[in-house]
Structure formats: structure tokens, C-alpha cells
Length: 484
Image (cartoon, rainbow, N blue to C red):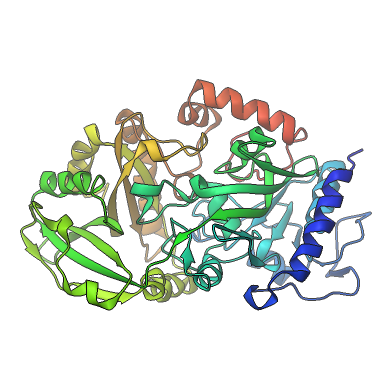
């Protein structure tokens, strides 16, 4: 029988007390107060533990979490837990252990291949665990269901920001930390998981543990970008940096791929550069163009009038209009388009992978020249990554000092189109492997067990397997990725 850690219970009580008394004006979000455990619908689950939150078993609640951003994998759970406390999560994990059920946490459902869905299992909706609390001048604490937009707003009150921000402020902290989390400053600061100081994690055995690089360090390293295999994040302490007031962005156009990639590589070493990204576009005439976007973080409006020094020596053919916006407007730049795409429920067969510098040119040349490979791509980002900044063992990077992340967003209009795009992604996997590339798991087809072992490599795979056996001995957590 699984028991909860006494140490974990005491730590949770202490943290609740802390949250009640800390800077109430700076806290965003709170869970709805419930006076008793409530079960909605006709439950197939027996002998449920007492819960402070809600356990939803009605058709509407279950159907609402049966799909994700990809809109092509459907898995219907038996129940959805809306926890009021971390204790609810621990109880439900313990219940899953003793009743042969799979379980997993769902943030905003932004994976594309059903990774957070569970057929006939229990889905935990993290949105009710959403508090964000400042800690000191360098960190804040966020619960897993807090959105990155909420984190940014709380940090901004202290003129701070997380060093790496995703481009969708409606994504959850627990969601992106479970997969990695990249943004337009990743070339300098690594992924979001590289900027986490401490975690509270509920293991697959139902134990709440605090972990960091110095304390329970293996659980820490196997949870960040661990796809929910060893534990569920209950709290993350995030590193912060000074926040700019404004962002000035330049748009540079290239006809030559090598100049485009080489300029991106050079900019990764330039001091004073802010965001850095690139994309491939196709005109109505079928002509391919490469677009580099780079910017400066500004502390005052006057700075935007001065040309940035980092543009010296770049080999672009032309320059588009520059823009200056508030830091918040920059962070929130894609909110409307992403929300509209999600609301449309149109299938999104996305594929994201990272390819070493030595093979990126040949891979992109193939993509551009192949009608089948490029099928349905509406947005193709190409951004440089410096491998040394990626420190988390489970966020795998190619064996190269410099790599390029390729974000291939496809949009289907009907079922045949969608199936063709999924087939195109499947066909690209062996080519990516031959190029020395690594997939970004939430936006890539689910791999076979042998392919996962190849993805992680023999040493990391052995370590991951051991951690799974240690922290989730009954294999109840997050079956969607198909790793174990």
C-alpha cells in the first residue's frame, strides 16, 4: 500500500501557510473554495479518497480533455480531477497505484500527438493550481497551472522577467517545464528548464518531495523535460532577470540560405542582442525567402532611435520595417493568432526538431525542394541554438556546438490533407536521425521504445529507466509519449 511522505505533508502545510501570508497583492490566481469533495456524473471509480477539489466524470468534462492541439488523437479518460490542493494530486496518484489506473497532468493541452491524453485513465487538470508568488529579488514560485502570462505580470511588478519566455502566454508553467520550453532568447539562456532553481514534485509513488540540483537531484533532473514520466510538478521556483521596458525588432530579408544561417550563427555570440529568430517564407510565385528577426531590449524610448551595433557586417539583401513595442506587447504578440487557431479545432500536424549546423543546409534544401515534405507548412521557423546552454539531460540536443531548431507548423483543411501531413512527418523522422537531429517531443510523432532509446542515447536512457523504476515503480504516470 502506498503511503504519503510525512515530510511531504508537513512541507505542503508550511507552503500553504506561506502562500496565505505573502504579498497578497502580488498573487495572481486562486483555486475556487470547496467545502467538500464532489463527484460529477456517474463514476466507474470505486473507493475514492476524500478530496478537497472536484472529480468530474460527466461526458462533457471527459470529452473536453480527450483531444489536444493536434486534433487528431482522441483518448477518453474515465475522470478529470480539478484539484484544490497539491494533496488532492498526491491522493489521486496513490489511488491510481492501488486501482491499476494510469494518470497524468494536463496543462493547456498544447501537445500535438496525444502525449497528455489517457484512455480510460485519470486526467488532472492543472488550471486550478495556478498561484504565482514572488520570493525574492531573483526568483518567484509558480504552481503548475499558472500561465506564463501570469508569471510575466507578477515578475514585471518587480521589473523582472524569466530569461526565456515561450511565444504563447497562455501556456502553463507545468506544461512547458515538462517538455523543455524554448523561446527567442534560448540561443543565450538555454531552455526554460535550464532556468529552474527548485521543484516540488509528486512522484509516481505519491510522495511529495522538494528537489533541486543540490537536493534530491536525480528527481530534479529526471522531472525537467521528463515528459511526466517520473513525477508531476507541484511547484517551480523560477530564476528571474531584469526586465526591459521595450523591444526594438529588425526584420532582415535574405535570398541566400548560407548567409541567412551564418548571420544567425554570428549573432549568437554578439553582446547586447535581445530576441533572435528566423523563418522561411514562400511567395505566391513559389520563390523562397529567408527572414531573420533580431532585436534589442531597451530600458528607455530614446535608445530605439539609435541603430544597433549588432547589425554591422550582416549580409541581408534588404530590410523590412522595424518595430518598437512594450515588453508585454512583444511577449503577447501571438496570443490572438494562437487562440484563434486553437478555437478553430483544425488539425495541426506540427513537427519540431533540432538539427546540427553541419547538416542543416542539406536538410533545409531537401525540405524546400520536396513537395511532399513541405506539404501544408504555413509557418517554418529556423532559429540557432548554442548547445552549451542546454544543461538538462532529458532535453536532448544534437552532438554539435551549434544547432538550429526547425519549427514546421502545418495546417490541414480536411482529413485526407491531415493524413498526408502526418505521413510527411513520419517520413522525415529517419532523415532527421540520419542528419544527427533530435525531435522536440510535444511536437513530433510518438516514437517506438527502441526509437526513444536511440533518441536519449545509451547513458541517458539507462539513467531514465532507473529513475522510472525508482520514482514510478508501478508505471502509472503519463503513458501518452509511449516511452515505458
